[in-house]
Image (tube, rainbow, N blue to C red; front, top):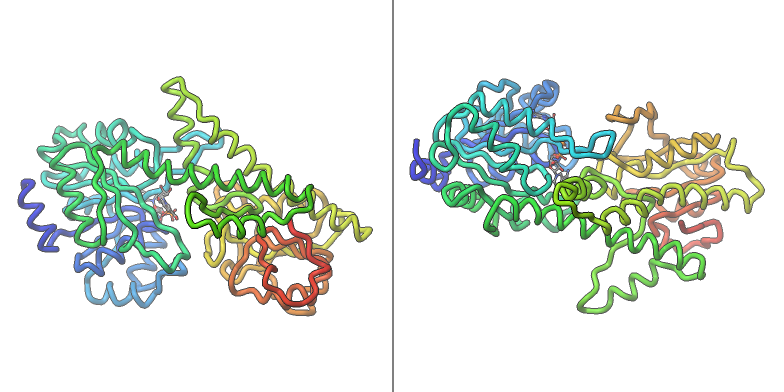
Length: 439
Ligand SMILES: NC(=O)c1ccc[n+]([C@@H]2O[C@H](COP(=O)([O-])OP(=O)(O)OC[C@H]3O[C@@H](n4cnc5c(N)ncnc54)[C@H](O)[C@@H]3O)[C@@H](O)[C@H]2O)c1
């Protein structure tokens, strides 16, 4: 099958779309392509996910099980762990993880493994697109040689592009369909096909001149957030000493109709992207004998935030003649951000570990995470406790780490003895806030 055949199949929505990695990015993307009228074959190495999907169940809170069940029933979506089936789809989209190693260097093992399994099944006329966030150069330097090792040539026999995922889980005002899609490719034939594919399912496509530009674009977006969050985190510490409320300052500054975008401080960075992706670029910069000082400084400030919060908790308890050691502390919110069920890199995990290390008895509540899953580097083995006026009154301190909308902050303020609020979540509470300390 040649370029024009594939283009025809894409434009007629007859192309079978393969999505590799059915996680927080892959599943919403599957929904988007199915909604646009394509059939999707999903791939994952996690057999339990495959089993659940084919049984019409979801494991991601904002993707309803009913939607999966309907798509499976209508034979528009199925999932498999069989890598030999990678030759079936016309288009393959890679959405596998890109974490950091223990030494905080890019861990491309998932991308390499995926590229190798695709290479083993690659046939003429397939389009491969990498969506995983990574440093500029990955698609050309890492993925392309693996795919070409079997003898097929890019731009002639198969096509290769990079299009960054810009998913923001938990958001309702923008969806995968409405977020403009940046597409960069190895060459013009690949670009034309990738633009055509996404153009069938997503409202606006932004073609750029190369994979490297598309890769760099995603990293720029995340560096921008990381640096600006570090800025307000640093200012929070200063303003706190000066007796100024940083949240009030930000909301006043945000009234400027141009030239200012509000970022908010917090207990530290979390999630799969902002704490990790900038370091992909820092690592790559070394190859060019360049440094990325903004990224390093932002990382330093943001990773120190949990320590600051723990100090604030200790100080607030001290004011009440209580040592941290032996105090009962309830952490509200385990997810890394509001209204999601994802606790990857969550600062709450660090807070719990640091408070425990100082002798506190820590429990948590999170309506979205009823028990803690085992993570790559942490295994808290905890269960969410129930929240009631009586239970709140039983803690020496309630630490608000994530500002989930489900919480009744009036009740928390009314019944907790002491609250340390890292998110300004109690701002709208009408009751007396004498027991609230902002951190
Ligand atoms: N989660 C987000 O909000 C978000 C937003 C933008 C970009 N990203 C980027 O998207 C990529 C995926 O992130 P995610 O949050 O969806 O991760 P995830 O962990 O939720 O999902 C990844 C999936 O890939 C599977 N997988 C791993 N190796 C595989 C292999 N060799 N073959 C097939 N499947 C494999 C895993 O089992 C998992 O189900 C990352 O690069 C991330 O940085 C994530």
